[in-house]
Image (cartoon, rainbow, N blue to C red; front, side, top):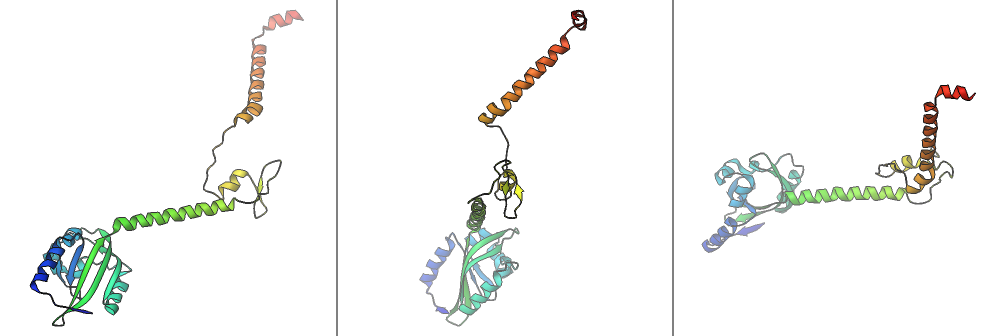
Length: 224
């Protein structure tokens, strides 16, 4: 634990640094009393300096954060802590913050705590989204791996035999192993070889039926 003694000149410089810092800075006691909060801290959490001094550490600490207990324990044992904690704002919103805190002693022996806080909410959310995307990609690659290798397929009906010795259609087999949905159509070759002859035959049948329906029954009797 460090013992600190500052002259007036150094205090003035330190004050300028803290007042113009983009990161939130707190000067506290280990019991949670807030002695000072810089303008960035007031802007980040929505409290005035007087409100911080009245409310103490409980104003921003989120007791529901599972990482809080281990963070306080680590600082108590080692005199410092660095990590990410979830902190709360005056309006009730939550921030994921990168926090560094250290305990030191004044010349008279009084303990103080310095805390520097950076809002990393967007960074953490992006990392979480990237993690989910990587997991989805891994799952997709795992599914693709299941489709590799030799597939036992019937040369007549084209069903595929699965690992349980059941025969399934191609669509059912692939759908159960990969995130795909089938849409059915007709390729040009099958259209020419299968569909077109059926359409031509249907047209001939319709023409023949229509011709018979239009024939004159009286004329037909005279022929006989």
